[in-house]
Image (cartoon, rainbow, N blue to C red):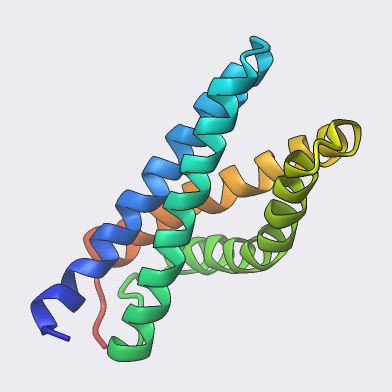
Length: 145
């Protein structure tokens, strides 16, 4: 794969996370207004954005490796705290997202409604902190490979 394309992937990943955040917030808004049809479309689009992120992320890191964080002092601790909570909750989010979607697909809305707020909160945290991590790593405190 062309190194120029590889170097664009982190920016694409930030775009996917940003899109996912907006779509999740819209999905939450529409379900609060009882607009199930638009809610479903927003959540499906958020799932697609997150899936594209994950494919891009795995592709990038399998080819390019990682980028070392360049910040020093207190900001380093903040970065690693955000990264750690992001990573743990990303691992938790995936099965929750799949379960929430499964319950909606099966029209098991009572059980769907029990897990959906938790899923939404964790998914939002992961998508927002993904953009924060990207901004810190690639724009505020760039490091090296």
